[in-house]
Image (tube, rainbow, N blue to C red):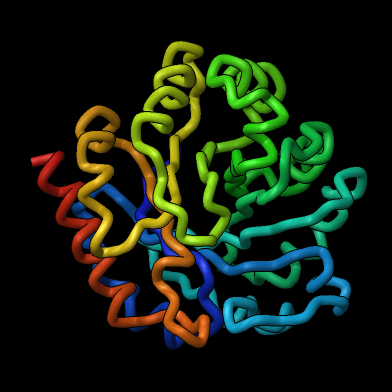
Length: 252
């Protein structure tokens, strides 16, 4: 099973990655997840880029080869029927140090994921459950767990619970716990990830979750940006340090 991670999404340069790369010690039991945003519109050259978005042709330059780092493209598309082909193209852009994808889509086609994995079985797949995906299952933990178990078992390595979608909305730990328990009851053999409004100031809100689910992964995005929507490296550094401490305290 894949190692849990402490992640940051929205990198646009290798310099940003290198500034933060060695804060999480390898002995902590977690790896550092480097998330880079990409969409079908960006892939086709039809997007309006923000300070969170690197040019697609520069993505490979962002990813390094540190052994305790998980390099993921966070991919969004509304065209589900051609997802495998899109991922083939994005894999080429990611370069040799890209480890896989987070799929920011509401219930992407399992057939398309399987088609991609037949060609790239070594790549990691994170299935994001966002607002629309929750709503499509009536916000019912049992329905979400059942759909994951029946349609995505063996296809994805992590399942991410994220109602925020990068907008810095703080997660509801009681709500998250309901879903995590439903996943465990179903015996879903994936790592679990939570996201939503995580910053150095809000990490204490998930301390009880970590105590109950010590192999949990976390990811942060919107809360680590400055007024110009740039990654705030000082704030990001503090987030990684405090998150590493929280997980180490639990495991000690």
